[in-house]
Image (cartoon, one colour):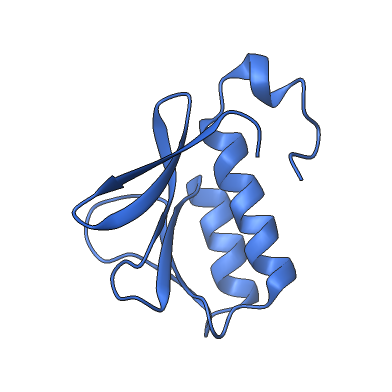
Length: 100
């Protein structure tokens, strides 16, 4: 995806665009990922696939946990693109309509 940098914190790889985290692998467990979504996007994706996506516990609006083995590939792609778009700087986001 354009502008993405891989980084690692606490032994979990994360992915950033414009210096902002939008995805993390292996959290809360190895078979999970966490995406930073807008609250509206989170509500939509969780409602569409509640067995695969869930809000992260705590006070972090939009943090969404993804059970990678259960989540349908098209839904993961949709959520990943939404998370990237939400964090990407306008100069990158507007230039790339579909980052894949």
